[in-house]
Amino acid sequence: MFDKILIANRGEIALRVVRACREMGIRSVAVHSTADSDAMHVRMADEAICIGPPPSAQSYLSFPAIISACEITGAQAIHPGYGFLSENAAFVQAVEDHGIVFIGPSAEHIRIMGDKITAKETARSLGIPVVPGSEGGVPSLAEARRIAGEIGYPVIIKATAGGGGRGMKVARDPAELELAFGTARSEAKAAFGNDEVYLEKYLARPRHIEVQVFGDGRGTGVHLGERDCSLQRRHQKVLEEAPSPAITAEERDRIGRICADAVARLGYSGAGTIEFLYEDGQFFFIEMNTRLQVEHPVTEAILGVDLVREQIRVAAGLPLSFAQEDLRINGHAIEVRINAEKLPHFAPSPGRITQYHAPGGLGVRMDSALYDGYRIPPFYDSLIAKLIVHGRDRPEALARLGRALGELIVDGVDTTVPLFEALLEEPAIRAGEYDIHWLERWLRERMTAAS
Image (cartoon, rainbow, N blue to C red):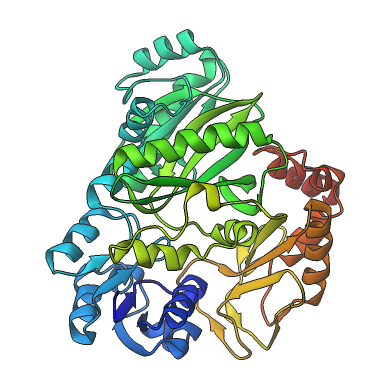
């Protein structure tokens, strides 16, 4: 087992890894920019080292700064958290070239799943169901028209190197395809330096279902059930729950076994998430995230498994601490992502926290790096907290979420807490009857009514 782990991240996820290390008797090293010198993960880690100025490119995304911090502190391994360098194959290769262990999958697996076309081809070869569409990049409008004609409208054009909704456009008929195709390529070029796009069938009202998987790198793979991440705004998840209120136990078992088998056949090591669109009883592969997810706590809540601890164990060469037959779903869990944003336009709201009180009680978990007097810097993502609740069933979890939101105090900045309080009043949310477009429709209706 490792003696010391460096955490190449910030905020609540860095603090989450610090806590796992402490429970395992492993010393932790926090890295930070000058803007984060007073951050909670810096205070809580055993050691801390400044790696650069506020811009991420000069600190949290700097290969030399992070690898140098490992060498200076004697850290044997790096935990990347999520975001930043967590899915950067070149970084993983550089880390391994310096004799440091990367707590995550191999650079090869990150490369395979990082390119959406290659990922789709790999998924298909592993028996994972995929959305009908082009088999690779679509080089021309004429080819796009041909494929759209074969699979039927509406279609969606996506950047092969895309993410976060950029380079993604929908065409509902041939007249819309020309503009959508050109716009998607332009956005992809601007955002990722690569204008290659591919084309898929656009599902009208799907849900976003993701399956948590784990591999030991030696041919063993397991699944830890699914999470429903269908409440989204601009392709960004807002609320996640597990298990999904939309799928049956039989569907869960079927898609879970497919995913676990795929992970085993890949020889995949560590945590991963295989994401699907789900509609009318069918699952269609979107992508695989080769890292820990923001929403991993809902899986931990219903299964009683520490996923970060398991990541560290596997990276150290130890076997999984559980087998598939050991995993039993217990109750229901919901997570809401609380951002420092001003509603209704979701404008970033950095600033000083004048008062902070976290909710507590049975079945309530608050993952946050906030504290009284902390100043949220304007340089990074606006996520400031994740509120996770667990109940014996979904109604109890919803009731517990409402109670916990009422206890939470974050003064000094605007937050998205009122959004979740309003959502809990909606019959569709309480019934679990929503799709990936539901939230944006609801927001548009409220904006229209308010104007």
